[in-house]
Amino acid sequence: MDPIIQQLHAKDQDQHEFHQAVEEVLESVKPVLDRNLWYRQQGVWERLIEPERVIMFRVPWVDDEGNVRVNRGFRVEMNSALGPYKGGLRFHPSVNLSIIKFLAFEQTFKNSLTTLPMGGGKGGSDFNPKGCSDFEVMRFCHSFMLELYRHIGPNTDVPAGDIGVGAREIGYLFGMYKKIKNEFTGVLTGKSLGWGGSLIRPEATGYGNVYFASEMLTTRDQTIEGKSCLVSGSGNVAQFTIEKILDLGGKVHTISDSDGYIYDEEGIDCDKLGWIKQLKNIRRGRVAEYVETYPQAVYTPIDPTLGYNPLWDHSADCAFPSATQNEINEQDAKNLVKNGVFLISEGANMPSSPEAVAVFHDANCLYGPSKAANAGGVAVSGLEMSQNTIRMSWPREEVDTRLKQIMHSIHSTCVDAASEYNYGQNYVAGANIAGFVKVVNAMLDQGVV
Ligand SMILES: NC(=O)C1=CN([C@@H]2O[C@H](COP(=O)(O)OP(=O)(O)OC[C@H]3O[C@@H](n4cnc5c(N)ncnc54)[C@H](OP(=O)(O)O)[C@@H]3O)[C@@H](O)[C@H]2O)C=CC1
Ligand SMILES: O=C(O)CCC(=O)C(=O)O
Image (tube, rainbow, N blue to C red; front, side, top):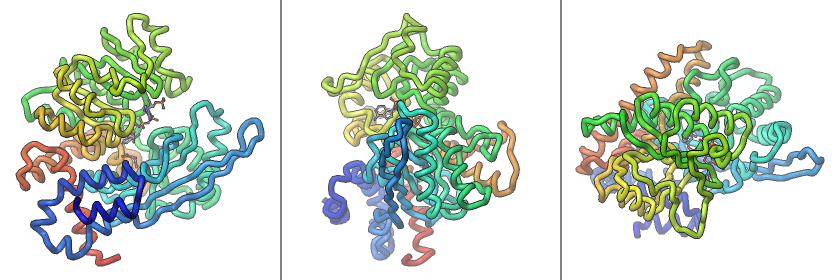
């Protein structure tokens, strides 16, 4: 084992997701380190895996029955070599330091790939918004911001949404920040359109992922048109991935949540997608309800004893995992390949286990890793920051055109970096190398800080 990894395991025991993310990047960039001994001498790698700052705090709040509840809040400010820390907040009961550190680490390289001046950070809480009233969510968000506000700012750290944090939560967080600081600034992205949000930000991660998939398909003279697709999740990223696939003439058969998944043989069309948006964004219901309105579809509850997810065991051309980390294990990857899937483009962060990634590479799939494929979300957040700074709102077409250009540029950057280091069409290596080199060169310019 590389001594750096040995040290990491000894120092940060039980941070499995963080180890997984670090090991993948280190493996990819070994040839870069070998070619540039200066990088090793300057301890860039040791510095990269140590967050610049980790903030953990108590979040007390009162539920509708008058009980005091306490959650744990996190913000990991990973790396500011390229700009203010930037990355989302996740509210989910599974949140812990390992998950936030892996997300902040990945975010650093992802943000580097976008070409925009953003460092990497991530935060969140083990708070579960599911089943809470709007007032409970508001009280939680206000309490969360009562601590977080001291650590963030439009030129310091600019959080946004992630799992469990959408427009509603960003609104409550922003309201408390504005009240405490008595200033109206672009301290959060993913704001509503009426008060500083950017057009296309809600769509950006899903649309960007499909643009990245289209770029990968172009290398084999193909397009999304006519392709059958499997999508997991049913939240922000899944919804707009489906919308763009439909727009480009593809067909989508699946959605899921943490209880189970839907397989719709006929395909999810625009009307059904509208119904899903209502279900998830307004009624906050479960995907199981889909079959009550569309009885030709089949609902399968999650069975953790199976050892694989049957959602990935259907015949299709493309897969867009859009729920959470490690949702595709080795068996799922084998099932996908067996069923004819040859393109996997990741909307979720790190949804494929290392063993699954190896299966995709062995089968010569077009495999777009999350830090490249889902970078459209944070890229449009960067554009939201620019619009806030100049106090202007760009039209929908302009933001969408910029998003497409950024995804095109990320694709070619990955291809070029992989080719420079003889990795062939390996987007994992390309994304890791290109993201790493830009961050590390900035760190070296700025000295040992
Ligand atoms: N929003 C953004 O702009 C970006 C998001 N991402 C990534 O995309 C993924 C989805 O995020 P987003 O759509 O914003 O989040 P949402 O909260 O809108 O939706 C999350 C979806 O994933 C499901 N899910 C969450 N956790 C689990 C779990 N442990 N097991 C099974 N299903 C789960 C949820 O089901 P349920 O309702 O049951 O919880 C829900 O369907 C995440 O990995 C996120 O980090 C990446 C880049 C940007
Ligand atoms: O828009 C942002 O700043 C955050 C996006 C994000 O959290 C991600 O890319 O994983």
